Image 1: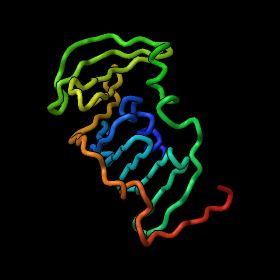
Image 2: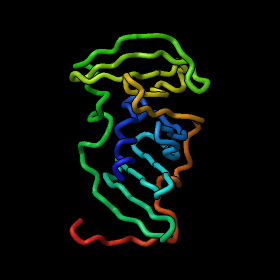
Image 3: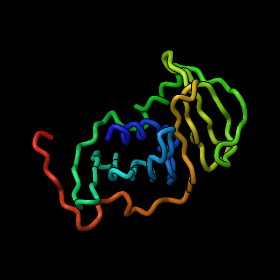
Image 4: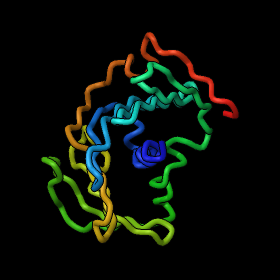
Length: 172
């Protein structure tokens, strides 16, 4: 769940405005497949599926093996206007070079926000106005989108599949 929330934070405000699907990879390996369509996001990993519906202010965590899901109200603070990239106004973005990342021409920037720095490679493809890779300055961590498709994902991927039962968790 923590990894999934980190993925949400990796989605930049410009990416939230578009529709796409992609495989997310990091220095730890394949993180899974992400689908995004405006206020709706789905992240599939080997551990399960998370569907975030900002339009309904709800998040569902699905456990396909057991055909159950948990529902969690979505905090108003989750979304593009509250993501770290939005603080860029109080930070700095310095162009470093033009590079190719997984076949995507991109501009590499050093981004510094509130004293913390990292690199971002922003795609030059007008259909993909988003970072295709982010990384620590020392490359100790990185994540990147691969196999990006700008086709609008099927609306069904943002719904709870038929046959799933809601799981109650005391105290939530």
